[in-house]
Image (cartoon, rainbow, N blue to C red; front, side):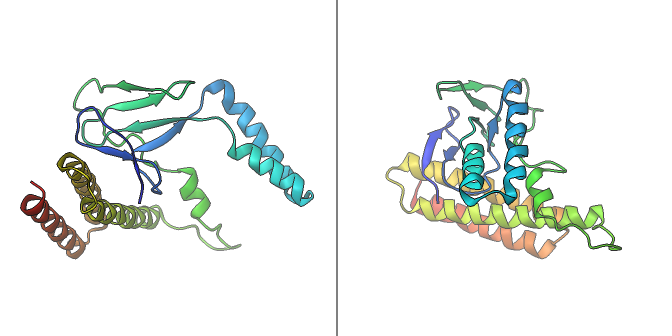
Length: 209
């Protein structure tokens, strides 16, 4: 479970700092730092057969590379960017048509590429539809986990507004999980997730509102 970093100005979503696979968070790297970063990656790869201390130094240099954080509120679509001093600045979408999931992984995302095992000689790579189903399944499980974690945190809320924020997080996560289940064509999972979301809504209305 993560702790709250800040709440969006719309009051409908709370950003957490220590959960994995957050669909609303990312990192920003200026173009002038982009190529030096990849030069450092090349050096780290080249040091794969170097002594352990040299490999560790190369890896630590990559981990310490400066990158500013960016967040997008899945409720209102507002984008928050850090400046060089770590201060957040809010940018509002031009219209309601702007997607509220700009920071989600996209086709060919690095982590998905790294997760894929290269085909053996003579073996056919996975079909695009098979890969899409795998990614939808991963998203479903991650969102369901995030939703359950947010629901559990409702009971630890220190105030009604705190509980409301965690309830909002749970709803958004389950909405995303339901969408992933629909992409998979799994009516059974859609019904189960919708039932779980309805239960969470009933608990919130009965105990926290």
